[in-house]
Every structure is written in C-alpha cells, then in structure tokens.
Length: 539
Image (cartoon, rainbow, N blue to C red):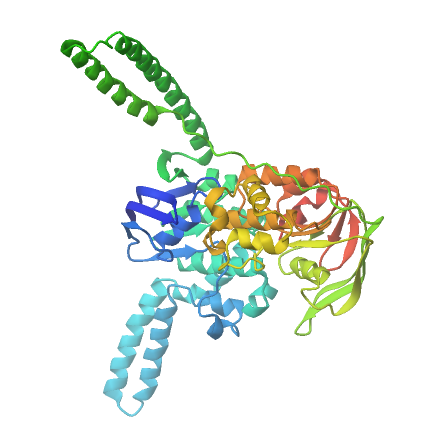
C-alpha cells in the first residue's frame, strides 16, 4: 500500500502541493490529473524519493515500481553493452530464484566424491526445483517475450543493444521491465507515450487486471476511462479526490462547481443583508456598538465561508500563435538521396524529396524506423551517410526535440529564451512564455525543475521566437494536456510556413491535413490518405 500524509512540496515561492493525504491500496487504480505545470510529475518524484518534499510522510510499502516520464537507464555504464532481452529479463521476480537453483545444481557437482553430501545437495536441489516450477519459473523466457511484444517490442529490437535505441524505444523497454517486475504499487508517469494502438490496449488491460495498486499520471483519456477508477485532482496546490473514471470526474467536478456557485450566491446575499443592517448601527452608543460588533463577526465568518465555497478560478487556457514567418522561396527544402546507418546497420533507404513552401510533410513509421534520426540528419545534428540537404532561399530550419536535450536543466527558462532571441526584450520574452502557460516566477526557475509538459511548452516557445520558417517537430504533443494540444493544433493550422512532423497522435495529424507522407524505413513518399492512420499510430 502507498500511504501519503500531509505532503507539501514547494519550488521557490510556488507551493505545488499543500498537505496532500491519500492512500493507494492493493488493487486501487488511481489517476493523478491536473493542468501542465500543476506539479503532478514533481509529486510523483517526491513520492518515489527523487525530489525533496518540504513536509509530510510517504510509505511505499515493501515493493514498488516507478516509471519516470523521462527515459533513464539505471547503471548506464554497465548496461550499455547489454541487449534489450537480457536487460528486461533481469527484472523478472524469479530470476534470483533461478540463480539460486543454478548454485544448488553446482553444489551437487562439487560433492561428486562424497555420496552423503551429494545426496543432501540433491535433496535441497529437488525441493528448490519443485518450488521454482510451481512458481512458473520455467516460463521466465516466455513471460519476457510476451511482455516485450505486448508493449510493442519486436524480435529485432529485443536483440538490439540498449545504446542503439531511440528515446521512444527505450521508453518501451523501461515500461516492459517495470510491468514484468511488478510490485505492490506501480507509479507511472505517462505510460502510454510512444505506444501504438495495440500496445496501449495491452497496457490498459494489464493495469485493469493487475493486483497492484496503481498511481498514474496520463493525458490518455482512453486509459483513464478503461483502467482507472479513482481520480486525484491537483489544482492550485490542493488535492481533491473523486471516485470513478476520468470522464465521471469531469462531470462530478462541474456539478461540484455549480453547487459551490449556488452556495456562494446564498452566502453573498446574506453578507449583503447583514452589511445593510450594520450600516443602521453606526451611532457610537455602547449598546449599538455591541450589536455592530456582533454583526461584523458574523459577516467575517460568512466571508470566510464564501471564500471556501466560491467556485475555483480555472487557470487560463493557453493560446498562442506562431508569428508570420519570413517568406521562403517556392522550394523550402531539397532532400537528395539522404541515407543513414549506425554501426553498419541501415536505418532507412535513401530519401529524395522537394519540400515546397507551405507543405506539411508527415514522417511515418514504427519505433526504430528512423523518424527522429531523419529529422536530426536534416538539421545536421547527425552526419548523413549519403545525400544532401539544401535549404531554399531565406529558409531557416527550427527543430523541436522530443527528448528536450537542447534544454539545459541548470539554466533558467528565461535565460534560454534570451539565447534563442537575444534582441527581444526580456519583458516581451516573459509575455511569450505566459502565452504558453508559463507564468510569472516560472521564467526564473531552472529548466530542470519543469514538468514534461512545461518543458514541451518551453521548447515550443523557444521555437516561436527563433524566426524559423521550416519547422521540424518530433512528437510535439507528448506530455501536453488536452487544452494545450488544442492550442498547438490551432497554432499549426494557421501557421504560414513549412512543417515536417513526426507524431503518433492520429487525431492531431488528421486535423492538420498533411500534404505528403515519408514512409520509413523504405523512404517512399506518397500523398496522405485516411487508411494510413494505423501506421501513423505505430511509433
């Protein structure tokens, strides 16, 4: 069981969580929801012991699993040479029992010259083997393969080394490892990022049937409605609990706010009546003053009650637009025979394409097909094996990186905006950040303290002030809440420049109406058609 009592978390002058208390028992399936930047990821980190809390206690029980939003491979130096299969297999809860069984088998061989000791070793081995078999220990390998395939890891990827994986692939590996290991409590931060449709369904079904308690942050409404049965809503530092699915929570929240509004109206009317009465007792006689003070105490009490009952002020919806870009020539970008390999392994076939001004090009393919690699080749981050990339007249490329490696966690948000656009006044840059939902003191925070959604907004804000007119976007909707995705969609729909996009969000892609699609790894180019939606989701 996860037990959280009076948890308070502060960053600088901001109180992210105030006196949060809740339980996640065996079999509970709980969603932690709130706008980007509300403190959800920070709260999970504090619960997992990776972020210092200001006060309160956390009891994680005897065993727990923790899936971070950002990819991190434990013991990186010692594991870089391991293949994916071996790395996932090490997490199986029966691996230690398997090692013990092997030790007992070797003990039998050590006593070949002493029959009595050998028979004792055989007896110990037989008992251990029976326990191992009853626990399904001989199914470890099939368990590993089933879990890996369930989250979308194919045979080729299973045999790959960790160091050769993309960010999305590593994310799948960490998810498979955690679900295979299990635990009394699973703490998951955006578990369905980078998953295709089938893998999402697998994760939903797994979480629904798991005996573990689950605490999850997700913007995947389908996951929250199908697998989770309680909602913790974090808003303005306060945590409120709702029983039911996410959709039921939205309805209950609206009903609660309507009830608060009605109650507040009643209290406000009573305050007005008492205030009118108090004004009649303004003469300074002792008896009148006594009545006036009593009315003032009553009004103060009602004012406090009004504050508690008043509907919460919802945070402003983000709303932003990219400025009109500098006009490029008719041809924005020319790709000729672009190819790439890693360690002798071909990533994608040669690609040739003329990108015209105003084009929206979608890059489609499964994880590992080379989508991110292609974008990095276009930007010159990766050296191309062959081919040329020629920007058109007045064309300036801007890159949104899904792993945010271009953001320095140790520098402030504002200073990194200044680096991109040194000629803009800081007040203007703060205004841009505010349009992206990064208000006030957030601009002065170190970027490493931001949530995944806030980092996404920061990266988009940097892109907006960079004067780029050919945007290369790698999974820009990851970690964004629904209202922020809508804001980004609207901004891109009205954008007058050129876009090359990698995304698994089928609804987002279709509403943007691509002009053409680059299919990886074969490098073919075609016009977009609705039947391509499934392949788009397989990222």
